[in-house]
Length: 237
Ligand SMILES: C[S@@+](CC[C@H](N)C(=O)[O-])C[C@H]1O[C@@H](n2cnc3c(N)ncnc32)[C@H](O)[C@@H]1O
Image 1 (cartoon, protein in one colour):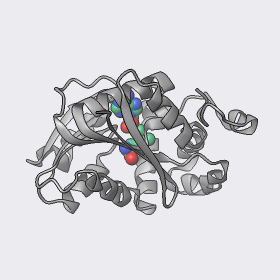
Image 2: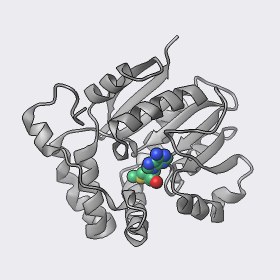
Image 3: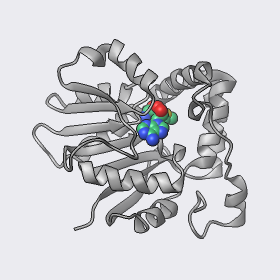
Image 4: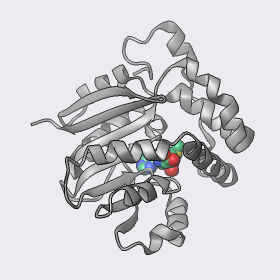
C-alpha cells in the first residue's frame, strides 16, 4: 500500500521514502532524545497538544469521567493537556519505548492519581475489550507499516469504544515547515521531521487500510488545521 493510497500518482510514490527515522532505531538513543525534545518544542509552538486534546475529548461523547488511553505518548505532554482540560478524565499514558515510559514515571505524570503509566505496543495491546472510552495515537501513525496500521486499527477499536488517530496531512507543500524543525531541534529534528512528512499516510490510504482490516471497522477521515489528518474509527456493528 503506497503511503498516498492505492491510487497514488507517480510523483507521490517518488516523494515517499523508506528511510528510517532516528526514533525508529533502538540503538540511536542520543538522537532519539534530541528528536523527542525538539518535537516537544515544535508541538508546543504549533499548539498541537491543545488541538489533540480538544479532538480527543470530542470523541468521549460527553462521558462524565472519560477513560482515555494515549498510545505512543512520547514525552506525555498531550496527556498533561488532557488532564488540565478535563478535571475528571482518567488517562492511561503509554509508549512502546520503555525508556520513554521511565522518563514519564520520573516526571509529574508519575505521581498523578488520575494517571496510569504502561509500556504498550499499539499494535498488540494487553487489555480486555472496551477498557477505555477513547484510545488516541498522535503524530505516530507514519511510524507503522501498513500491516501494523491494520493491527493498530483492530486493537484500538477492540480495547476502546473509539480510536482516534491524528497525524500530519500528506502533502509535499508541508516540506516548507522544514526551517521550523531546524529551529526547534536542529538538523537531527529536521532529519526525522522531513522523513515523517514523506511517510505520512493520506486519507485514502487510511480508508483503504481500514477496509482491509481483519476486524471490520468504520472510519471517518478529515483535514484539521493547521495540517492534520484526523481519523476516527470504531468497531463496525
Ligand atoms: C513522533 S513521536 C510522537 C510522540 C507524541 N505522541 C507527540 O505527539 O509528541 C512517535 C511516538 O510513537 C511511539 N511509537 C512508535 N511505534 C509505536 C507502537 N507500535 N506502539 C506504541 N508507540 C509507538 C514512539 O516510541 C514515539 O514515542
